[in-house]
Image (cartoon, rainbow, N blue to C red; front, side, top):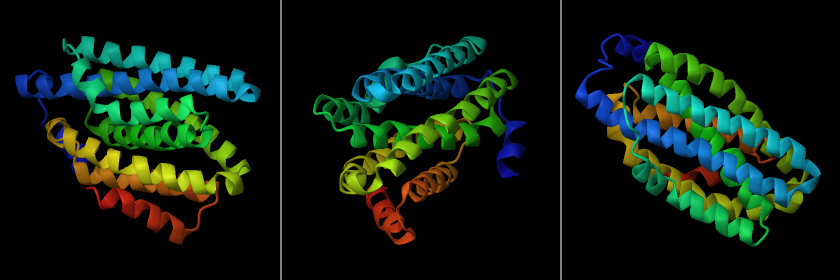
Length: 231
């Protein structure tokens, strides 16, 4: 309720709001672009699922265009240089894993970390968004759950063979999420989104995904601690 009450107090046309929005909007645009590219790469690595992964990449491209229209609606130019730097750690790790054929690491980064990050951010944003962006984001977040589901199903089917690589990929990549959340905390606050709520929603979504794959509660608590140590 606290999030809902703040939306009526936000001035979507203020300079401070638009300044913060230029970076947040760029992040969601870049995030969808990264996802589009990542699913196309996964289609090469998993030819048996090529059609499904190409379909997911096209959805991400539509999302990107939707978020570009949100920026235009507020007459805001997204700071894409900031966004590319923001995603550089996860981007580099995905590219490295793809180059060596480490599909499990690629799926953890894209289908679990990035999708859970997006789901958390969009769910926290929707109650405080301007009316145009709210409608766009509500449509996007429904799709993100299907993208998360692809990774969950594949990793569950290959859990025993993937478990060690998943744990290592988690150790390498989860700390990046906390640095990303810290980098964007002030801008998110100016849009009515609190870092604690983003962290909580991400941890819930990520923990549920790990549980669905086959990790125990004890495993999940241990794996989650790698992120918290970097917070």
